[in-house]
Structure formats: C-alpha cells, structure tokens
Image 1 (cartoon, rainbow, N blue to C red):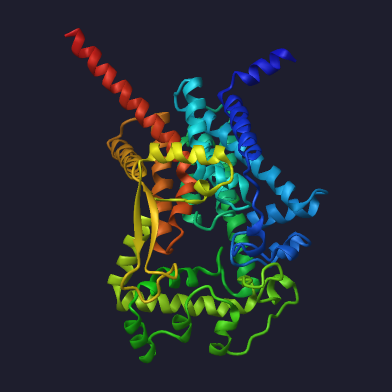
Image 2 (image 1 turned 90 degrees about the horizontal axis):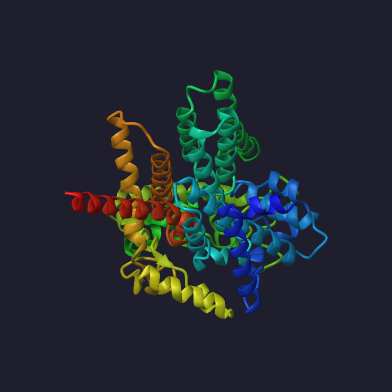
Length: 494
C-alpha cells in the first residue's frame, strides 16, 4: 500500500491536485461561497426547476445550446440526495482538482521537471479568473479542463502503445468539448481528430479511422438531426442569429438603424434589440404557441427568476432567425460597423474579471492582487461612444486589461504558425511541436470565433484557454531559456 501511495505521490499531477485542494479549502474557509444564482437566470440553462426535476426530457427539448452541461448539472441535482448547492460545489471542486492534475501531467509530458510542472499547473489553475469557476455552476472551468485533456492525449499519441485507444479517446474528448460549449464548432473538433489520425497513420487500420470519425460525426450530427426533426433547424445552438444581431446592431448609429428599418431592410426585431423578454417581441410577430407541452419549451419566463426569459421557449425560434437576417443585412450595408465591433471585441478579450477582487475571501483577494501584478494589469475603458445601443447601458465601462496576456497569446499563435511552416518544409514534428500546433489552433479559433459573432463575452471565452496557454507559455519560456544557455555555453567554449 505504501509503495502504491509513493508511486501516486511521485506524479506531478497528484501533487498539483493536492496543493490545489489545499488552496481551495483555504479560500472557502476565508469566506468565499459557492454562488448558485446562475441556476436561476442562466441563459444557457433550461429553467432550473424543470431541468433538475426532469433532466433527460428537458435536455431532449433543448435547442439553444449543446446538451452536455445542462445534462451534467440537471442529472447531478436529480440524482443527488444532497442539496443543489453542496452537490454542485462538490462537482465543480472535483473539476478544479482534475484541472490541476491534468495541467501538471501536461507540463511533464512537454518536458518540464516535476517540480516546475507542479508550479506551472498551480499558476494555470489558481489564476482567480479560472479559480472562480470552481465557485459557480458555469461551464468555463469544465471546458478549460476538457481542452487540457485533449492536448494531453494529442501529445501522448506518438508514444502510446495503443494508437487505436488513443485516437478514440481523442475523438470522445473533442466531441465532449463541442457538446459542452457551442463556441467549439464541429469544424474545430473534426480538425483535431484528423490531426490525431494523421499522427498515427502508420499504426492504425481503416476500421479504426472510420470508428474514430464516427464519434464526432454521429454524436454531433445526431444532435443536429434531432434539432432539425423537432424544430426545423439543424444546429447546435439555435440562438446564433440573435448572437450575431447582438454583435453587430448595437454598434450601428441609431439614425442609420432607423433608416434601414424605414426602408424595410431590417425588421422590428432589430429595433427592439437582442435577448429581451418575449413580451417585447410578441406584438412584432405572428401569434405563436408552443407545439409541445413540456415546460422547457412552453414557458416564456422562468419561475426561478421573474426577470429572466427562458430562451429555450419554442416561440423564440422564429425571432432568432429574423434577428440573424437583420444582422446580415446590417453587415452588408455597413461593413465598417461590423469591423468596429470586431475591434472592440478583440480588445475585450484581454479585459480582466473584477469579481475575484470583490470576493469576501482574503485568500481570493490575495491571489487576485498577485496575479494582477504578474499580468501587468492596467486600467482602461471599453467605450461605446457613437453606438446606437451602448451594451452596458452606459457609454463606457472601466476595466483592467492584462497586458502580459497579449504577447502570450500572440507568441503562442506565431509559434504554431512556425511549426506549420517547418512541417511544410518536410521537417520532422516533435512532441512539443504537436502541442504548439494544437494549442495555437485552439487559441486562434477561440479568439477569432469569439470575436466574429459575439460582443461583450470575449474575456469569458479567454478564461477557457488561459490554463492551456499558461502551460504552453511555460514550455516556450523554458525553450527560450535553454536556447540562451546553449548560446552562452557555445560562446564561452570559443
């Protein structure tokens, strides 16, 4: 037994998980509480009283989001004999522990020593913007853990003795990520699966290739086919049109929007604005009643929060479609507005969350202050002067920007591009090259897709890749230090 414990403790992942758990307990003991308010108003969730009582049928009728996070939360609440708060806190803490473990294992797989792997893992997962995810039932932390698990499987593929199992595991993990977070489009998932298959192409047969590709195709395609059958919309997220409206129309000056409306180029939905209560839109739409009696589809407002719409309400579907058409009309007529919104969103990517600094826990505030210095946070504003609809209800919002994050992400993307160029010159691909290429692709995908069709959520998107970027950033720093030392040694030898 002692030998088994010694072997477990010798792993960097186990040490990082234990240390993360200790910090988590300290943060809890000093006043940080698990916040369940999201369950009452979360746009991405089926109304909680419905989801927690009937998770399977509720998720079957879900159309605004991929199903896994709703199924995970609702299934836990339905099955657990404990209260929702303690059940979900335990679940989110377990996800945090898994994140620390995976970050350390990934760091060791990339060549860092056990000690440095633990340090890097703790830096990656105790970042308050990441850590706060362990105290709320949102999917950012879980998505970040899934992304690290995907990269860990990828970097271990070349050396695994069972290539079939490795690529199947990769397919399961990327599919789980896409079915958790709609930002990670099937294009991202299939690209990484194909990359994994290419890496072990000489060690697998055709049946393995077909079985591996079947995982994302059947699961994601099956869910989209379900939505087509039930709602006439083959998508993973039905509210994309309204997301696009929110990304574009607020930037358009009101006079220009009114001119387009008068000309019949945009609908009344554009004048009302995105993501409002259904009552705001009802007079602008034909009469509508849900065709199904299940409460996940038939109720326009949540009973858990009278101010929060149920965006899974079936009668929102035609509104989402019209909102998307309006957004495309504005983009065609005023492309400069779309560009301005994208530049604004790109800046918002590097804004830092303020919630950790407002925590009641002195330990969380200490972590926030420490990371604020390390990130070189600088105060600034996100201005909406000249916009038709200031999205924060005001013309500008004061925020801090993490200046270190900008070069970190830029270097990771460029490092991946360099690997691709080297590969095109037919040079061999090393384990670290695999990590750089996959991380660069994922980081670029997150920033580009999160910027193109969204407005205001970019910093939240970034926190999902922060742990991954931290680990890979440490790899790049270590490589740079080694290169400097080698040059110094060679110059001394001369």
